Length: 380
Image (tube, rainbow, N blue to C red; front, top):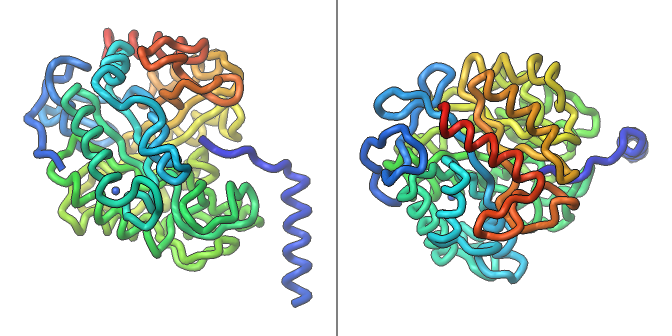
């Protein structure tokens, strides 16, 4: 979920200050081919890309519909253990009662690599593997994504000034991201029921202060020294190459700019993937810039016509569901998947939260998503 954005006036003021200063001086064996019914007593299906669709081994179209399960990105670096709430069979059974077929699992880069304190290294990795295996056994496709990462960033929308992985950063670092994805891909290669979302919410355009979109898209794809980001960046072409160098053929998802809300030049700058298993991701909240049907038609529909598109985070911050209802109606009509943020028992008035308890009682916001997942289970 994106952090609050500063107003435009503050951005302009910060830019003027900066310019003035410058002028002055993350496995189980691959599951057998699965039937397409959701949440049956079969493992989650292995998936691959076919044109603009995700398909099973039998060629059946398969949309990713479900939830995010936050906790693995922050608990390990906040002295709270491994997760936020239960990650056991009972909690997954509750997800199944919602007809969830995909769960996005945010991870912490340094906790996986063992460079952080708390639950870290082998213990962290094993906990993630155990949860992935549990989801797959329950017919649910896990989507692993790196949410909090290393790198010092102190400009617009900085979540912290700490170089450690204690908040989200604008882009993955060349220091740790390749090692993270080498390790994660090696752990789960051969299990194509698992998908990889290479970075939570890129925002090199905001970091540049100039909002130079072409430069930001080049940073997104190519990495290197990107203006405003105080560490060498690993571009997504490098990370796609990193995953494929392990032999992993898992589907890779990539979000665009502006906290994964802007896909306007995604097709132009998309990395090459020798396996052809590259898909697009977007985040859409009521407080994002692209939050209307006209914008979805302009920015998202052209991408969804070429590659599979999943809205890997959707939500609204008012405890209602009118906004996501409109969004999900659009997504259903365009064959686009979506995942609600988030399957945690948080106060939905302070940010999107789907449940009030881990038996699956929905919040008023969550009731909207649950209704749509129930409908999709009967029709997809």
